[in-house]
Structure formats: structure tokens, C-alpha cells
Image (cartoon, rainbow over the protein chains, first blue to last red):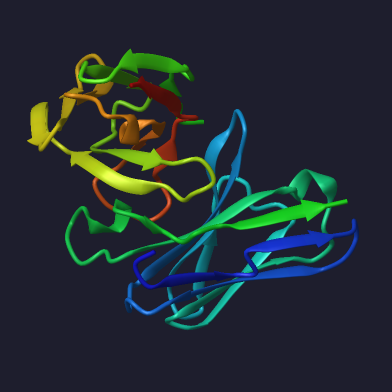
Length: 116
Length: 112
């Protein structure tokens, strides 16, 4: 998956526990994203980053926080997981080197999270 | 809320036929349009991008864009069983990181 590694790939946790998903890239791309994918909703943007320590909210950011301390790592944290956060989470990167580049996404393999 | 609409399918076509996938969008300011293919249990992968009205061809794939009608389509010629997947339409502005919106996808099955 083009130098993008997500971990863990699968996780089962209980309601109320904290969860952190990690995205690691070796492409030195500027933009990194976290999406969730649910049946009937498609891919929805949770948070994104446009540089080290530069992050912003997406469409469905409530209940999630992110951090980017290095170009290559983008962490997604669920402070207190709820059953509604059961989903498949995809990290994506884009280069943004060209005018249209910021929207050309490459996705990681995904992390399947189940909150019981 | 910017909307991207796709027929969820499933769309079934025989091997060798042309598969036609359609997508409509609500934001007239949209400038960039993408088709992603997603196999079951896998991540989306980009197969086509289009920015100008008209057709763009890449191998067996043709993307068609009509901004006046707010409509983008993907044609797959000589469909193969390996084309069986869900196809996601994504629409956004010409640049920027937070303005890409995805449809829910159309599931395509190519019957041998």
C-alpha cells in the first residue's frame, strides 16, 4: 500500500476504553488523513493534517483527536470508545505537490475496530 | 452538506460487456473528480481522475464529466471478472485537503 502502514489492523475493545490507531508513511507526503467507512455512509473524513503539528477537523470529528509530531506519523485517538465508533478506519496520504495533488489520495490497508 | 450520489447496485454485467457507473454531485463549485476501486476487505485505490468536461480514457477505463449536469461516469470496456469490486466516486475542489467527498459506492459484478 504505497508506503503506508496502519496499526493495529484489527482491534476489539470495550466501551469507555481509550484506543489509538497509528498511521506511518514513508513517502514524505505533506497531507495525511483519517477516514472511517461504514455501510451506507461511504468514506467520511474524521481529521486531517497538512504538516507537523498542523491538524484540522473533518466531517465527523466528534469523539476523536489526532496528533502529528513527525511527518511520517499520524495518530488517531478515541479517548473513550463507544459502540458507534465501530468501523473500518483508513489512513490516507497525498502529496499536494501539484495544484490538484492534495486531493489525490493513497490509502492504507485499513484498521478494523470493534467496540463492544 | 455536499452530496455525492451513486446507485448502490449491485450492477451485474456479463464478461466482455461495457459496465457503466454513474455519479451525481450537489456542489457546483466542484473541480476535481475521482473514481476509486475497492475490492472486498481491501482499501480504495485510485483508477481515474478527471478535471475537465469531456472524456478521459485510460486503457479499458473511460471517465466522463459533465459539469453543467453535475454528472460524472465511469465506463469499463471489455469487463473482466477481476473488475468485480465496489467503485467509489469522489468529488472535491481543485486543491485543498478537506473538501473531498465520497459517494457510498456502486458494487459491480462481472459474470463469467
